[in-house]
Length: 266
Image (tube, rainbow, N blue to C red; front, top):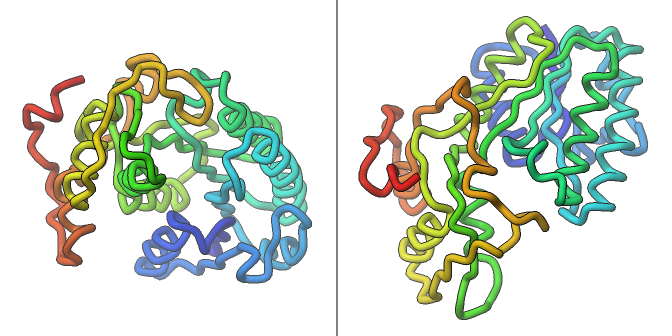
């Protein structure tokens, strides 16, 4: 079975390609760095030739709402047309938990547009909504030079990119669900508490200021805006194990981390 990964050179795409190849699937990375452009369509028809599954883990080059909307609208229409022409039997796409609750954000409106195009394409599909990646949260917290990091105290249930890739691999090699499902990490935290953990781990002296008015992609968060539903698939890797592995590149146990006091704050 040939599986084409749109965005195969990105953070999740690289992990997904590795997972699938470890299980002897025929995988093709499709991204501009591999000569395939979902916006212009360059190389897309050739990439999809003979494929049965197309997995879209691509993302807008910026988080600006208008730019993201142009990206997902153009790419979504182009991918759907090319996939129909190639006879793709399963379109899998990665989205974000809370997308439909955060429509005040231009970026989340763009993600909703991507989901809607997939559902309207006529292709068998599965959409996986993931909670925030540990890697993404750590990157956001470390960015910027202000002495004080203002961040929402909303609840989150973050996940490792490795676990997201594993969930996508399972979906890509299974039957289409024609539905949207969710995946999340094993623990709940306050977003502001995670920010403290990250800054402490990286010996960053900045102060974290929990601020309910702090926006997330331009939207104000309610306490549960970023949390998955009760039927979400729960991944294994806990935040402490992930953080330890990011600081020291050593093998990480895959057993779920215990839900300690910090993880029960939400």
